[in-house]
Length: 308
Image (cartoon, rainbow, N blue to C red; front, side):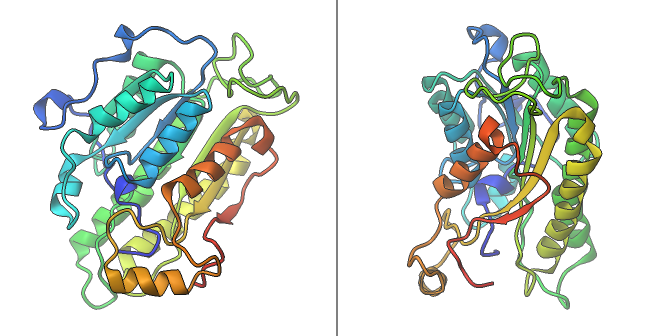
């Protein structure tokens, strides 16, 4: 496990299978939920555990006026040391709905190249066009140069890199915002419901990354490739009024650290504590807001000053 690993994020790998076929039942389709005019839609991958970074981001954006579509993948958590959290998707969805958000929980295995299309199809059908894409999923199994298998290497790149590229591409192909419109302006279907900045684009892409490589070859390498893809989107999607940034959340303990590692990382951080999902969520919330539109094409370290 890496010092930036987000188990909640890592639980989204996709093949939008009906959740009824799994132990973890998702909420009813959002078509049965009351419409909330003026709320933009954020699609967040990797929201499989209630204590994870993905769930923290979802809660923050829901409180800031967004409707939330999110993906999760229970089989990934089940094979990891922290285990699956029964009923997490439904529980998270209920929390978001209490904050005023319409929700769409989508169980998805991102190893399949057709998954992003099906995710966007379901998110749009249930909630409407997607304004913000937050890539918080990850495949992360510790291994180094000498013991990484070809199968593990390929799976990391399929989930962390290829799926992220395909999700960003699908977002760019479908984005319906109007560059220069006011966020939340009627008729655009995009933008946060607060803020009045004119002359700004409304689309947002934020990807979570890691700088860990030693003893974590496939994870670190696939995240490095993700960085390049996301930063390219800041330029290639600029004509759509879309910003794209990468966030390195630093050492955030979402249940994967042992006591020794927790103590070492705490001592290595000037602020004397570990990061929290809320720390990352506050930055993502800002980047998705009208006030954050000038931050673009950046790899931001939100890590409390922790040394690499």
